[in-house]
Image 1: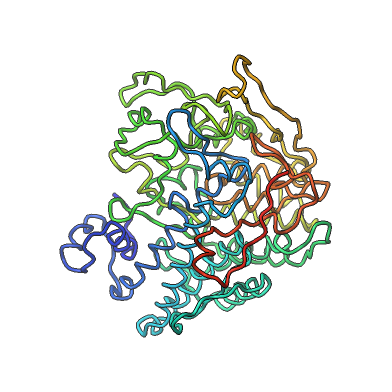
Image 2: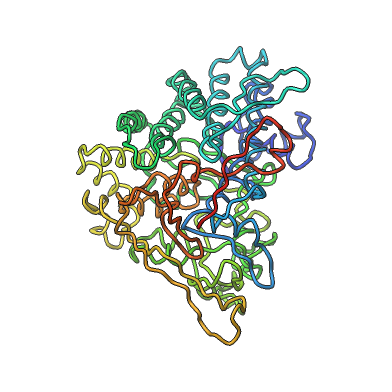
Length: 550
């Protein structure tokens, strides 16, 4: 049985999304009665449906935040020979950023659609009469601004719904936006409720958002070589402690408990966006990752494209006894639901070239449960904040502050413990390991011959050896990758973690076909350019600097 929760707004949002009837009559109730949803304050919740619809799209649409992780060292979508994909996915991987990346266009439009709906709802009398609901909308709006600020930095701030004809927003200075988000969240601390039902903003959500704002302050504002303001790590630590000390959350027994079709029973969830196919569509990871023939393994009959694959350098970074390796990824010969080998469906770990990869190159993701029928990963609940993240934020802050480093190592070891059941001793890590270098073998690693660039030359590998020993807190950076891959985490982490030469890992390291930036980086190197259609739609917007890799 699916979740017994107060999730009416999500069900209604899905009906809107699917173009179905949105009249809140007994027919609609009967459609979802078997799910045991509770209907309270139905008018208010129905009003919230459009907000949640847009918020969900920010994360789960094909070009949403879950896809923008392609710009990192974990996975990519290459041009598949004989299949397709390509251009904008390749630009993300290579950091050849332009004003034509559709991911940024769609993310921007969905984010501001959600913000507009929040502003509209907050002017409604029914919402004003319910302080907790009003505060939850403020928090959702802050969440949207947090994501926009992280990716684009120079963004418009709008807190009203009604505007005069011809009004167009102007960009706020980054410090103004940062201060606005922090003030909103500070005002909301303790005022969003502790238990509002599954999938709804709560007090811990506010703490987590504040922790993220403080944790990334130096990465967002400090110029190359400029000393960090350590007070922000103390502030982030206090917010993580508020979540930990609340006693409301704990680690799930199994890593996979957080990524199933229904994760409402996991004690780890702080903010989750629940989905129930066919009322609202969620993640399309099964469509993105599986080869067409691989659908037979799961009885999955929707479309599949063999688009995405894990980078071999990342797969090789795992400890072989870490259950997250096989809980998250699969490769090799695949079998159908009856156990028979699927002809030709044999994934390799190694990739050839982002500009031309064969269909079965690259390990595939199964972190999110793949359902039968048309479900795939559509019904999977998407976790935004979970308790493991609070523990890791605390560990990172302690290490950066040089405080209680043994406690920091213990916190990371707690997160690791459930993943080394076959070899519990390996779950234990030390502060020195976390402060040391990364085990990721950074450097270029691709085969130009895959797409026939040099006919007759077999295995023309382009490789460089950059290693990870020069990454400060590289051991912790590795832990974050293994724990949070596929959770809209990695880009932000790569920007926050530095190398001994002062560059961040995001710009300063090469991986697969993405080349390192060799010159001194600028803060602007960490943000995306606006899409051309976004600029065309608002003449007040000024384009972010566009800098391609050298």
